[in-house]
Structure formats: structure tokens, C-alpha cells
Length: 110
Image (cartoon, rainbow, N blue to C red):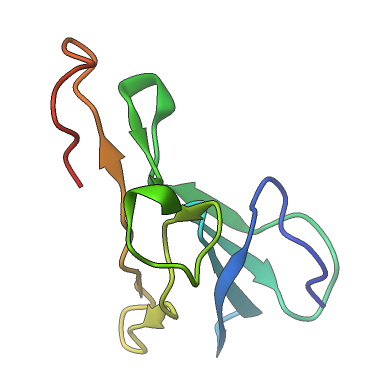
């Protein structure tokens, strides 16, 4: 049973996949993170990845940068992850903002 996601912020989507040696819950967050948890036990994630890299100025998109009032704080992964049943690959759509570190006055890339 999944009760929380560490360092995540708003959970935007959850998907359950039963295959192999674990029943897996895939959790995607607006903080551009994806977690895989064993659905049958409490514990640490089986795996986690993030699509941001603050050291390289790759962040989530602040909600103030969008015209969306439904998402507060940031926009990252909003849609439900999709799992390819044949390969086990998890697909997500991640939104990020990049400001070139060499030119902080440059127009951000979304």
C-alpha cells in the first residue's frame, strides 16, 4: 500500500501494473518525478527518476508562467503514466523550463 511519495509535491497521476515479481504502482508528480512502488507492501520506492536538473537550470514550470489556474505551484507531469504491457516501459509527458546558465537573461525554453 502506498501512503506517500518522498520529496514529491502534488501527485498528479497513479497507474497500477501487475506483472513479474511485483504488483507495481507507478506514481507521477507535478514535481517531474516518477516513482515505482510495490503495491503489496509499504516501503521505499523500487525505483525513482526525475526530469529536472536544477544545477543545469532545468526546472518544473512555475504555474505563474502559465495561464493555468488549476495547478498551483508548478507544472510537471500532469497526465497518467502509460505502461507498455509488452516491454514494461513507462511513458510520461513531462513539462520543464530551461534557462541557459550562461545567459540568465535569455528567454526560457519550455
